[in-house]
Length: 241
Length: 337
Image 1 (cartoon, each protein chain N blue to C red):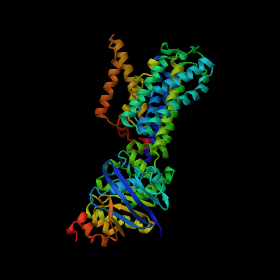
Image 2 (cartoon, chains in turn cyan, red; image 1 turned 135 degrees about the vertical axis):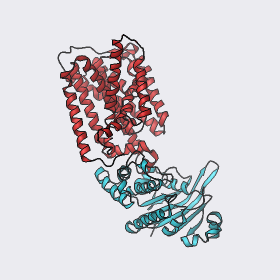
Image 3 (spheres, each protein chain N blue to C red; image 1 turned 90 degrees about the vertical axis):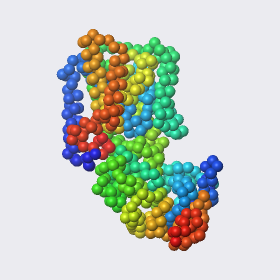
Image 4 (cartoon, each protein chain N blue to C red; image 1 turned 60 degrees about the vertical axis):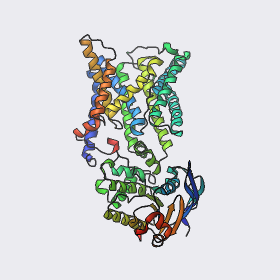
């Protein structure tokens, strides 16, 4: 089956820094793929290009055969890509429900329908009880879940998760992993995640792409990737074995 | 913050609003001309405040040049009336068109080239200022010497031409204020309202959720400038004289933003409450100084400054959100805040 997301030869330069150098990888439909690598490897840059925050210098990104590189963020979202931000950005003054309604309005123009959908998503992420509270009252782990809920409500075919496990306790990580696995199995949602928490990467992904200095240095099944000498050297360290 | 809005709270709010409206409808029968003129001032501030609130309170764009739309609306309708005998019932469409065009032009410059925050505020001030200077030299409508509408008899009311008694002006303004309130209420409950609030809170996150930032900001701009222009039409036909120095003055822009800020930015009732509190207190101050035979130039401005300081320090959300909690109306969804 063809890849849902196809990143091909993407390069990006920030002044003197080569952030991405001819990065290529695919995310097959219905799969969960993890993008890992040390800080500054270009993971978030890669996300931002896919999400339309800024254009690539060269290369193409296609979603189900349609090019999405160079589109605006809202166009990328409407094409079916939901994203979270590494530094969570809830609408602080709005309630949780309103936050998620904004996302749901992307596919359901009527507020009543969007509210119903928001309810479902909040429930799936264990935030239903707090739906009437302002987002500013949430703890960081809750904000991360809200971030996911809002992105999910936009009805994406592909979900881009930028370090949603960071700062979570192991039990919270496991809950999050369970949520994504369930979503993936039940709805066939395709997920590309940036993650440092290897516990989550190993549990979730069927494929791992490793970036270092803006280049893909390794791709493959998680079990194989963590044994790759190059990956061990630049990122995981010897003790990971 | 309290939990979800109970239907009871919503019912109480509706009853409260109905009572207030009834009181305002009855008011001209129970008050003297002076109080009526103050009430007209209150409603005028409430109306233009509501219009300004669409930009700042909902869409999060700080405009400090809204006097531009008041002035354009006023001059457009006045010129049509004086030069061509076209009454305000028709002229208001031209007034709205001119102001919306100006608003969209400013919006296009700002939102297309990503001018935000204080720079957006500066842009709006600049546009209002150079329009003021332009009108000072536009002799077709009187230049800096002012533009005057023929003052007609005020015993018979002619609604279509906005000529009549103070009570007629009062009711026209009451209808405008109520209309703007209802319109904003409807909008806040719709997709547009949610999108505006999202853009106000975090534009990047909003865009990542599929919101076309440029389109929705332009929409806020068009609505806000159009509504404000209607305030300008009223202004022209109520006061019958227009001076660029006054109507396009930056002080006017600031004045019309004070009501919503003091009352509660982004809330529906805030602009109305703020206008009431500020205008009535300022009038009391003036009356008190008259009684004491005091003459302090700039006392009103000083008083506004004091009010603003007080609100910023002790009620950063404005008076209404706090008062609302006290009244047991709850912190409901955004449409009720």
